[in-house]
Image (cartoon, rainbow, N blue to C red; front, side):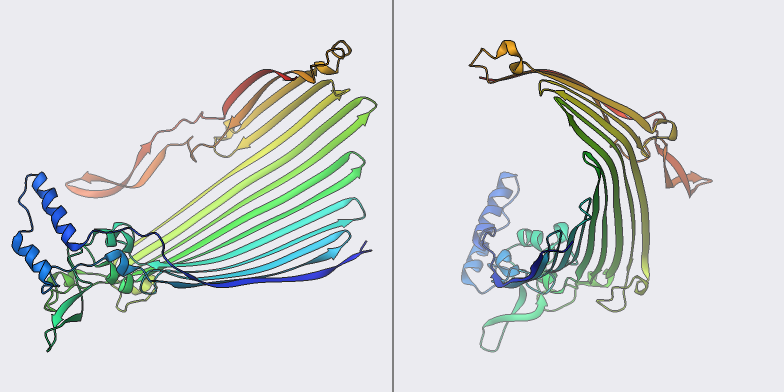
Amino acid sequence: FRSRKEKATLTYSGYVGMQTPTALPELVTGRQYMELSNEAMSAAGFSRPYDVDAFEKYDSGMYPNEYSNTDWVNEIFKKHALQTSHSVSVRGGSEKSSYFMSYGYLDQDGLVVGDAFKTKRHNARINVNTEVFDRLKINGNVSFVDYYRNASGFSGTGGVFRLAQRMSPLLPVKWQQQNEMGLWEDTEYWSSGSINNPVYVATEGGEEKRKSRTLNTIVSADLRIIDGLNLGGQYAANYYFRETDKFTPTLPEYFSDGTPDPANKNMRNSVSQAHQDALTQTLQLTLNFQKQINKHEIGALLGYSQEWYNFSSLSASRKKIPFDGIYVIDAGTEDITNSGTKSSWALRSYFGRVNYGFKDRYLFEGNFRYDGSSRFAKGNRWGVFPSFSAGWRLSEEEFMKDIPWIYNLKLRASWGQLGNERIDLFRYVDLMNLDAKYSLNGEIQSGAAVTAYNDPNITWETTTMTNIGLDASL
């Protein structure tokens, strides 16, 4: 069947560029910070934290450890970062078949100081279409994405971005000291206040490595049994996997003279790992009939479909790792924790449709669905949902032909029911907490307790709709 062959075409595209932050928050200066702090505390009924002497020290520039003017947003962001992307594809085929293959790569450096924030991605795709013996059409499509993202080991209110907006501008990035010439210069010690130094966190705050892989595949076929009768089928699967490795180091703090903070001895580094995977699969089979006999149009459809989903996750964490940067759970010796969960559901459906039209004037359609869901108990899993519709195109009647200003006039009515099964899993059983605590003989014991009472008779939610309408084009 390859009577005419298409020449293969190779395509490449790529770019190398520089990223630059263009819209950043504007923070107040050190003097504005002092003025606004005085105003806020005074309005709240407290004494002003900064007196005239403090403003004089700020203006003198001789007290950088107490009265600096640091723009923390400007300190955490780089001026520019590299980004590059490459993609290559091949397509070709013949009169009755074709193929397409592509591969792409993206490498993006982070715009935050340090090396914590960066991204890489690989993606590939294959699509094949073919027709066999003028009756069978087959299509296959597979795509894969491998995504890697690196971030800081601290997040939320303790993350780099929030810290930059919370840190006082009166503190320097690093504690300052005077050299022999009387000039102020950086020491090796990061400054600290009531919260962590954002540049310290960005530079030495560990990292969270997240890898995710997504595989999508769709295979479909359509078989023409006889003219007007077709058998179709489709299978699709989506697989998602994610792995997260996180190491959070200790960030010891020092006073401006280099003396260690006594609280450093209580700090513990930590390591955590998490795995998630989810698989969604769908299967659909349909038998479709279409036929026109004189002025009669007849159509029918029978179908079967199933969708099922499985999910699992596992995570663990430990503290006190002997060496920084070790992403292995066994390396930790304190605060050992672990958790895991699994969930699954399935939906199976039988459905059909019959439609009839005469002279494109009298129209009728009937539908039914018979759906079963694992979200309900065995005796309540199945529901029947019919629907019917009818239309009468009045403008096609002979007695309407002599009315030239009516282009189209149609009377229609429908009645139908739809089912909803999208409720929480296991709503038909009572939920238990297997880590409940209770007191026995003056001691705390482990046990189990029912935390949610549910309804074993819960079943499909049904929505009934009735419509009557008149369509007119004048």
